[in-house]
Amino acid sequence: MGPRSLALVALLVATSGCSGPLTTREKGALAGGAIGAGAGAAIGSTSGHTGTGALVGAGVGAISGALIGDAIQGAEQHRAAQSPPPPPPHVVVAPPPPVVAAPRTIRVPPGHYPPPGRCRLWYAGRPPGHQPPPTPCERLAVAPGAFILYNGTAWDGSYDWRGHARRHPGSVPRVIIDVSPRR
Image (cartoon, rainbow, N blue to C red; front, side, top):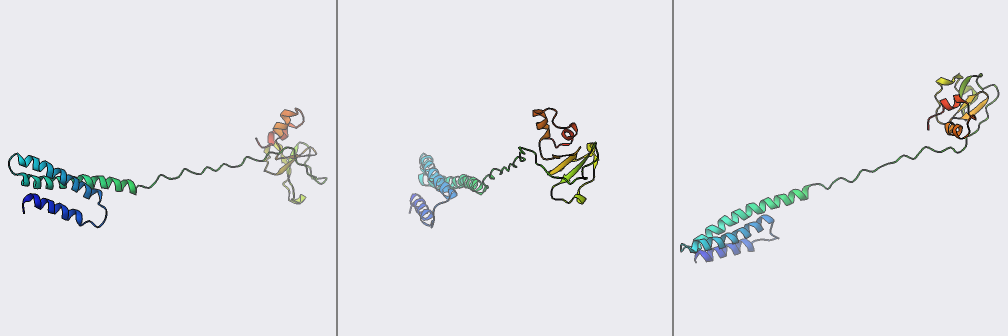
């Protein structure tokens, strides 16, 4: 059996022993071996040693092809192992504050309004004895849902009195505009 036949048998044994599809590394080794054998045979024929040139070329080509195939296979595995980009963040938008079209009204029992020039917060549903005491108006911090008692009138603390005063100049006391929450 000559060197050429030996190389052919080695190539057949290497390819027929595969039980599954070839990996990129194995494909590179086979392609490199075939190219190297052809190049080695061509170079070896110039000196009269075609078989030896083919064997040496096949070995060098197979090793080179396997190294190149291994690098390609590693890059493919690295790309496959990278996790997909995270999904875009969910944006949650808070609903706007409710728009009060008209001021609410409330009945305050007689004797519970503050003295002239002072203010008092009043909360619907609370008994009169559990309401905050009168205070100087400039110190008042109006909480949501509260009414502002001033000069015998209950002003809705949730209503836009600034806007009302712009639409109806002179209809809202300056004190109420100053203590109303900003909108």
